[in-house]
Length: 110
Length: 115
Image 1 (spheres, rainbow over the protein chains, first blue to last red):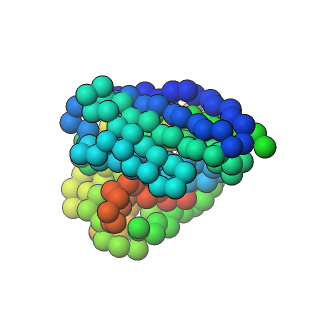
Image 2: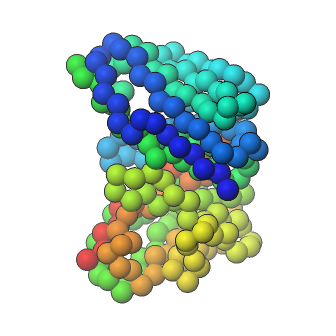
Image 3: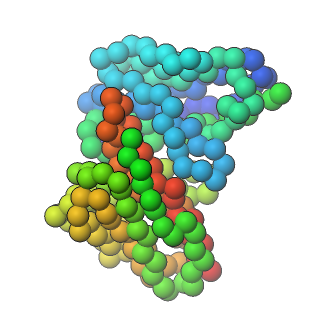
């Protein structure tokens, strides 16, 4: 089955700096890669996603890149703000189930 | 995206008892998914629930411990049976998205504490 690895487990940046979170996956059949943000005590919320036929996708300060050959994808957050502080999960799906990475706790210091 | 109502939001239960968690979706969905999130951990898929058939369980999860019902296309329940403190966790239901994004929408979760 699919195995998703995520790094780093914790990330601390200064407000205004960029943050990058990286994930790798094992199943070459995976074709959908969402990213979720989970604030303390709340449910995971989808923030951006990418399909395997696209190499990059951007939504305001958030972007995701995908390298199918290397089986890795990354989340990029630019101009970070304190409200970006949360746990971020990557995930990979080859069909009807979705496997999640271990999560990255991002802290943005004002 | 779908709106999911999950209840109870939290409960404290005695070991050896069972708790049933309910998930109601505002649209008809083919599949519903049940996840467990232990404190400070990631989301682990427990099972996939299709309407009209038995749920499909992931490795490490069995029907006797986590029976699931899916009586129609908008509703599902997960029961945590014969609970022990190790079952203390957050349980979340989810469904596939309906928009151009296929990302899952999650219920608000059930925070279970077993004492």
